[in-house]
Image (tube, rainbow, N blue to C red):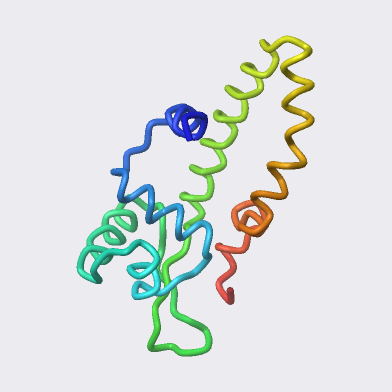
Length: 140
């Protein structure tokens, strides 16, 4: 948890912690309805509407019409939001690479031996939608 916090601090966000959480859910779950997003975040529909409106005004997310039911709107990461996340990840990865390079050989070997276990622990979370481009697919 501490490592995740330090990594997040490599790129101060303009969003509030609640906005960052909503954005993370949108990235992870792809195009999502506001109702499903409110449920996933454990907040009221009016709260999610305010958070989504702020992220949309920043240009980080966009609303799209569901291709199977034109009455339904979904939110997804915008191209600008994707570029922002890519920049953040690049900076975070550069910081982490520097930290790893500063470790001794024994510590790096210990980390390598733990990778398999960590990958199995996180495998249930599925693949990364930003890397796959899933959230920007209008039909998705």
